[in-house]
Length: 108
Image (cartoon, rainbow, N blue to C red; front, side, top):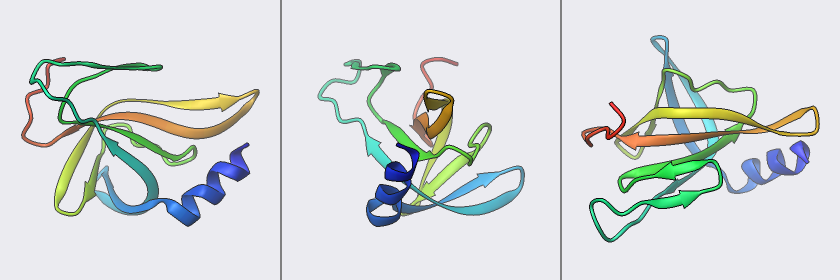
């Protein structure tokens, strides 16, 4: 399963820059902004609740995003929560909830 995910990342992933610990690293991942009509409308995901102006990140399992930020097209996305997703004993990908810079963090 991990090999299929990695193949999909290579073919369809978006190139982003991960800023973490004072370093910048290029990473290919999927980023899906959450679109919602109302300012307080929530969208339920299997791994948690996301609010408007947030995004879901799916990236390589071995690239830790904890305490980092992702840059894409001049937008900075702060990592709010993340976890590795497993199939059996194998880490397949990393899932993260991101908040766009400048947006209020409702969990602060």
